[in-house]
Length: 214
Image 1 (cartoon, rainbow, N blue to C red):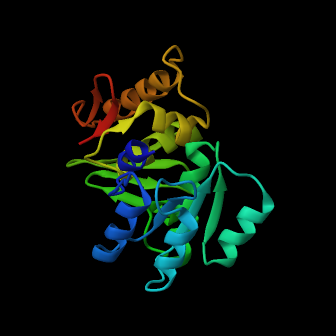
Image 2 (image 1 turned 135 degrees about the horizontal axis):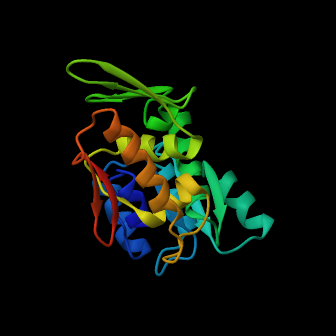
């Protein structure tokens, strides 16, 4: 989970038990806390109580228990959301975005309708890409999957996006090393951009990891 969140450009502090979590909460500021109920030492509900006694930091409870009483207890204790394991990373990521939206509408690029990174301008409503080159502007219309793939790379530029993360967020399914569909879509995105004049070195394959927009 930490690796996938970091691939989305979140800065993550992963703590192994309740005592370590309490210490971190007392000494650091966080934009959001994902809090497992079943922690060694101090349990998640006790940590939630400690958080709420001193801060309004949003908290998402994460637990293997599906019982309604656990969910109600968490929400009544001040949790902003409650996710039951097992859950897909896509679901957790969307829950995180939703909570951050409520606390800070500008906190995540998913709220943007357009985005520009250097010469690449993206229009999310029309799945349209405009390349602003030195001598001309080129407009490219992409399929929804191709556009979402480029959008994810652009809004996380400079960071390698792992294949498991891209499968979850773009293709909406679990990663399989035998499934080459992501590579196929990436190849088509590259070819279309390069044909319109983008430097071939801008989108890179990071061997054994994923893709990167420089």
